[in-house]
Image (cartoon, one colour):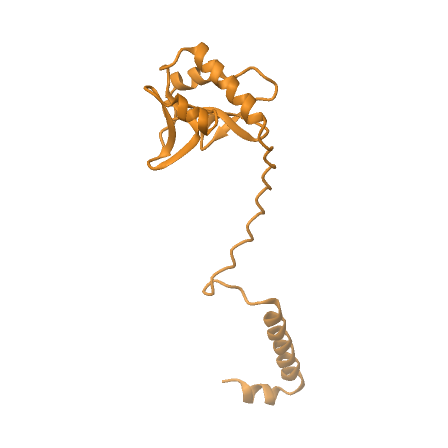
Length: 161
């Protein structure tokens, strides 16, 4: 996925609404702005994307403004996509503010749960250590054999190969 260049990031930064509800972050490594956990304005490759709602996006999609398609055939119908620098800052700033206001009305997204740490992968059978119970049994057998050897050297000699 192509990352935005410095000019695109600057275009985005100049037009993010200065509103305490707008929180800057990233989505898929691209600078974006969120309100209540929902993205309303951001970058994608060398473009900016603005969430204006499906009816408004359809009305605006003319010329240099198009419906956002992060992958061919996968349109995000609530978003418009504009090449960096193709729209005057004042116009883009107004759209970004419109997007903030409209997106603020959506239900807030719940914070994602932190991923649980993955359990350690069990060792493979070829390198596995014996289970503690197996080790304990072997130790008991070895102790019994040593005791038997002390008690009867002949019995120990008979068992030895």
